[in-house]
Length: 273
Image (tube, rainbow, N blue to C red):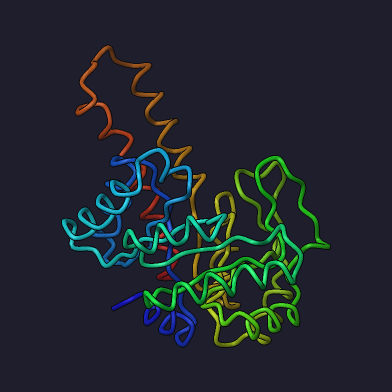
């Protein structure tokens, strides 16, 4: 099944999928071990920073080969693509899905940029995700004035024919300094305005399980998780390194891999509530 088909199923069934960022072999192993154990499919996400770190060919080869090795249904997605050029590279390299993030542009500029990517991705049969409204990034304050508005979402999708839309309803990238408050009434209105489009929740790290489940009930189909995995990996690695003089990374890294797997399983379990 390709990701366009998966998206249609998710929207039709009011269901959701976890989209998890990976950063190296170890985080990838933890995610795939969890998905195999839970018997779920997942989207593996790589940002520009990850691609720059691993290399384009290595990023694709790792994701594709390890997904096959684990027998997991999975897809490789470009997270927060910042240019048409990067999107084109990812499509040529074999990504299954791409995101173009024009959320900091004006509505018209975001539409124009997204249309270019949608037209490009058509040649590959690959779905495109865009962002409308503004999900605060690290260190930035939340701004309710920049939340996604239902009629703007409807107009944006009509103009761009984008497959998936990341919306701003109160989440933020990174960890939260105070308890986030998601605008579920706004989410319900957005879902009514765009009934056939896959809706994406960015900034899910730090959102309570109850709120994630509620978001799925009200129309979110793709749950993005990144910061929690990165943080869990580094914290568990620091802990074991502070308790041993063992220099064999082949014995040390599995501790961190296990913690990634435990966290991922907890996320997958939310889909079964």
